[in-house]
Length: 301
Image: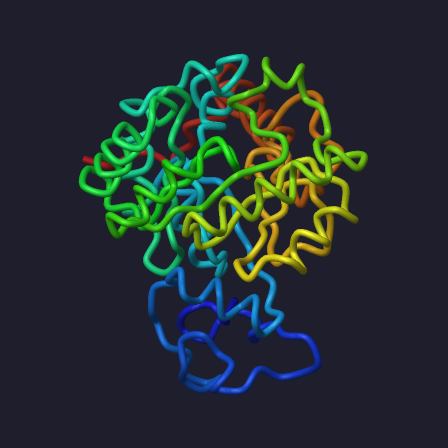
């Protein structure tokens, strides 16, 4: 949303030219941007001003610190950790106890970005009381700034209860990975009149329940644009096209760390998998040949 701390990053982005001090979420001039935390109110201001919101997943201190320095607006400690960290086939087995230490690490690494904790499958489906208890655990035990949960109409009561307790909630509709089996696999949502109507109903239910933003995953661009126009809260795209108010990607997909097939909507900005593979092979060769450690890597008496 704004320039990164210390003035070393790119200038604030906006449609139609330079962002004024009044438009800049944190105040301050270009030469001295304010070093402050992104808050949920900045999401709303960004939507109103046409400033695109950026988000990445993160699961550890080191990646969080790098993404934070880059000026990424929010970091989601996603239940996608089930695939990227724990090696599960789906996100369904992920537990609250597994995500809490990951979220705590990301919070320690982020001084500016809003950190959102993903509420995993089985931690809120039983109703508003369970949802609130889970959200409270994340807030108290990790220091996260908000939580995210899946579902539109079916999760509206849970969202409302958590928000009424003073905990910000990001919604998630469209393709919801925790419902993968019920949806019949990785199937694009919102297609056709019925699909579009259901998606709109879910979006409005999330907004009416008090969520500060909503993720749209694997949704056709046209219906995502309609949702974005109808809602007053920001929409965040995960494969929902350019008309949304922001974009979110799983960092291991985005950085080329994931091996094998990646979703069509992912643009890879690096090739970390091959970089690490090459480095590991070079290390192995150097050790086996005696090149490493060299004299410059030794301590003298």
